[in-house]
Image (cartoon, rainbow over all chains, first blue to last red; front, side, top):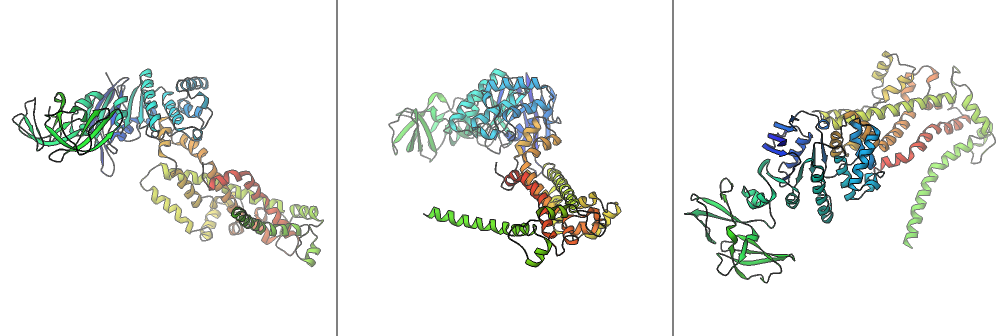
Length: 350
Length: 274
């Protein structure tokens, strides 16, 4: 059942920029939805509209069956974790957590009980009397989380909360957030531009580009069946390979190679996409590349090279590869794992 | 070697600066402890004399002026009230003005700000006649309110508060909003505590500004009961007697008290570092 519902939500800034365009999405109770997209795609704007920090130009946002378009941010019963945490610098951690409860008019004992519970949950009890300036980045992050949790809101909104942490801590906190969210069962929206975060955290992803949701689906769905050329390009590292060509009598034909298509399609111009891990070396492979560069990552190796028509392709192999630069290798497509996109509409065809 | 040299040089500059401040004060103070005739004959003195209590008691408590209505302690009290009133009111007014300029994004807030700012080009001395007219129409001549009100809107303090508020990250306001703070609460719970060093700095500036006023109190007071410190120096204690030294030393005390109390915050406020 839908809990947080966006219907044709649009945001146009006074200077005419369209940040979000007729976006509809429904998020069910307890779900963790990730908005992912490049910077400036409108994902943060969308989140801020849910929070009430940004006016809504058009459309309706409903939370728990109540339209919240005109509701004051404090009345929406949502909590937000900001990118720079936005902790109150002049209050100690206890007061940071208690401030929202105090404004709700809760009693002193009640506040103390709730703050202590949350502090215990997040293991920040020993810092309660410190000011944010005396905490490390990770501890501040916890306090910011605590401030959201303690109010027991209807929805959590996360605005890139991990981007100020170092790589190792980011991994840890990511797991913690996921666990906490499941444990508390609070509907959450998480904004990020980092696709690893998006893939690992989200129950579902909404891939956003230029103010439009390109695809909504589970991480695996999005990865295996990208709905548009943009999604295919954005999700996955190294990036998916793209080769321009055309369909002719159920065969994909490009300058570099040909391959038969398992689906009936009209003759048309297409973009053929294939992920690096879906290629494998084979003596009679149809794609021939000249190796340009090899990245050895330990667990696997990534090999880059040019095909006959100068497409820069990339292929992933397990372990420490024996291929060297300037080798000529032939690759074939594994298990017909390829993606076809219309050249005009950029939509998926197969 | 070079470190010792550097320390020596910098310390000598500092010591020289301290002497530049202290020596004239000491000269005035030492001279204020001699008898009138001694100073008259011998000029200013480096050594302390034996008349300290007599001189200070006389200046503080003898009624002076033409109507014999006011003592120096009364004058200092008047100036303190005036300076304190100007400082408190102008800090309060500027904070509110800066708050509305920065956080209530009305269409013309920048225009309003510059309108306020260019009043710096029109100091009280330039608009003294209309100001007198207004205060007179309000029946505030010869009153503390008349001394304080015309000087209690400060463009420079508004400017400082505005710049400071603009440096506070937007997310803080947003987080507070989500935590249920309305605009008044945000002002009281966030801006006031966050800007307390700035408040201290502005308070001292405005206090000294108010304490040093001469022309305005001169024009708008006709009763000697409302005379202020600079007027007193000119009209009562400016004569050729030892009293002027005593008076000058005494007149330093109120601003020094304010600075001693607010010094720590004042310095932090000038060098905004957290």
